[in-house]
Image (tube, rainbow, N blue to C red; front, side, top):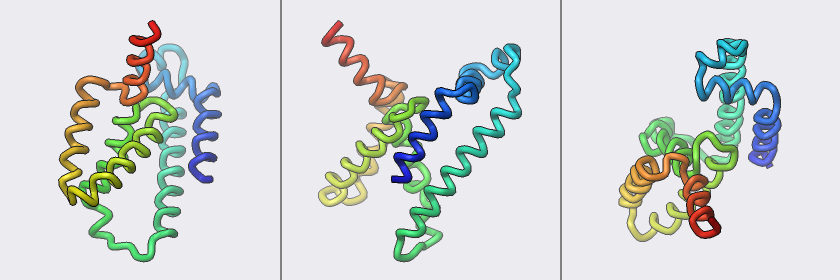
Length: 151
C-alpha cells in the first residue's frame, strides 16, 4: 500500500511545475538556471523527497524484521541492489525501478536456491549488459522490441 501511495505522489510530482523543474535540472542544470529555475529550491526539494521516502522505506523494512544485524545491512549486496534494480528497470522513469525490483526479486528466488551466492555473478552480468546495451533499462528494451515488431 505504501508503495502505491509513493508511486502516486511521485506521479503527481512529476506532472506538476516542480516535477518539470526537477527534470530540467536533471537534464541540464545550467540551462535550467538560465531559464529561471531556482536551482537550490528544487534540488533541496528533491533531497527532501528522496530522504523522506527512503526513510519511510527503511522504517517499514525495520518494522517487519524480526531482528536487525547492523553489520549485515551495510554489505555491498544491500547497498547495490537498489542501484541495480533502478538501472535494470530504467532509471529516470517512474515505473522502471519497480519493474527492475520485481525482475531481480524473481531472479533471486529462482537462482538463490540452486546457485547459492553465485546468483550475484548473474546479477553483475545482467547489470553490465543493461548498462552497455540498454542504458534506459528494461523500459527502453521493451520500447525497442515493440518498435521493431510493430514499426
